[in-house]
Structures are given as C-alpha cells and as structure tokens.
Amino acid sequence: MENSMTQLYLVRYFLPESGIRVGVQVGATVHDVTDTIGSVGAWLRSSAGRIDAAMTDLMTAVGASSQAHLAERFNCAPAPDAAHWLAPVGVQDVWAAGVTYERSRAARQEEAADGGDVYARVYTAARPELFYKARGPWVVGPYDQVGIRRDARWNVPEPELALVINPALEIVGVTIGNDMSSRDIEGENPLYLPQAKMYTRSCALGPAIAVGHVGGVWPDTRIAMQITRDGGIVFAGETHTSQIRRRPDELVEFLGRSLRFPDGVVLLTGAGIVPPDSFTLAAGDQVEIIIDAVGSLRNIVTVV
Image (tube, rainbow, N blue to C red; front, side, top):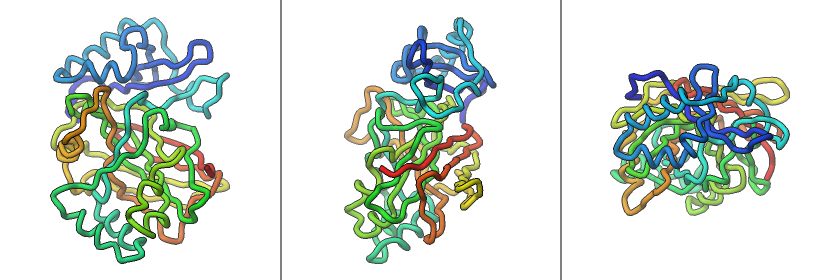
C-alpha cells in the first residue's frame, strides 16, 4: 500500500462498560479514538479527496487518546460481558467480485451442472462479475460464528482481500474477508448465486482495516487459509495477490458506475484458494484466514 507512515490499523471493538468503540492499533496497542474520529463511516467520509490528511488525522487522534488497551484483550468470542473485536465496518455495505483468479474460474466450471461456460466468459470479459454480499450490520467479526446453510450439502469458506473504499471511490485500506459460499446451490444454476452467497452469517471481516492508499497495483501480500476440525488441520492452502487478474482500481471503477456509497463500501476481490471437491465445512470447524498485510481472521462454523 502507498503509505510511508507508521502502519495504522483502524478497528472497532466492544467494551462491556461503554459499548462500541473505534480504535487505532499501533503495534500491540489499541488507542481509543472514538471521541475524536466518531466512527469508521465518519472517517471514510472525511478521507474523500484527502487520504493522506485523513491518515494524519488518525495519528493526531492517537496522540490525543487517553485510553489504550493491549490488542490481545479482545481475542475472544463475542459476549455482552467481555471485551471483544467487532467487524471493522458499521453501516458500510459489502459487495464482491467473482472469478478474478484462474483457480476460481476452474472451480466454478467444475461445480456447474452445465459445464460453467458463463464463468469462463466472465473471466476474460471486459466487465467483471460484481454482486451484493451483505449489509454492514450483517457482517460478523473475529472469533464470531460464520454460517453454513442448513439446506446445502457443499459449503466452503472463500478467503479474500477486501478493499475499503470511501465515498469518492478511493481505496483507503484493506482488510480480510471470508465470503462463505454454498457451492452445490450455485453449481445447480448460476441464477441461484444470491442464495449461495447471501444468508445469515455468510460474511466475516476483520480484524482491522490496514490503512493506506491503494491505486492500480495490488498490495504485495500472501493470502493463506487453514481449516481445523477436532484439533487437526483438514485443509490448508495459499495464494498471492499477484494472481488476481484485474486491477483494484478497475474493480472499484465498475462498482461505482451508477452507484453511490455516501458512507463508503467494502469490496471483496475474489478467492484464489479453493478446497477440493470432496471437502465441505462442518459445524465446529475453525476457519483462519491470514493476509500478511493485515493479520489473521478466525471464525467458528455454525449451521444457520
């Protein structure tokens, strides 16, 4: 990311005594900047046309903060009587781009009942596949539960780099996304994609927004995923942002055509890690997604 300053991470978290807070994490310390910044949406709005100045605002807020916490304090499942991380977005909607990796194109064709010619065509088409994923309040955060549909038999997580975009359609940071998907439902008919992708607890983001301007070049970072069941690893894989076919600014430009996002928006950028066809998630599985530029997002699987 184009950022010569100390790397800042914008976070949301919950304190039993004071509710939802906004913080800036520097190293292992989280500085409460709620009184200065207000909300993630307020900061995104303030960054429009002034990204560098908005990052300076965060540093100024850190200096003015009177409350700080160790980040590890929040590494627990959400509970009303315990401090915990929240998804790093509030009212911001989440959209997603599909078939941006060669591996994703191949997987979609393999799962499709009709051979998946539509996926082969969209991979090379001028217009990318873009679809609505979740309202901000639907998104779950770290250590929370992600869902698999009770009427699906083939469910997988999709680890994705997520672009955080301000109202001026400028990319001001990245986070980690888990785009949960029911492969058998989408494979039966591409028109079932909303049912395969949009349901309760189908989207997780976190743990933080790694703040920094992103233009026409992807952050140079590894993306990895590990799934654990009953204490053992049942799947592990990795990819790299160099494998994404389309540019970040290209995806955002298409997303912003005839759409406005007054509070900002998040765009998932596609999955390059696909478990084998014989694999499906089960309740109790732990999914961990690591993106070196951001950190680690862990979630437990439940049936919804």
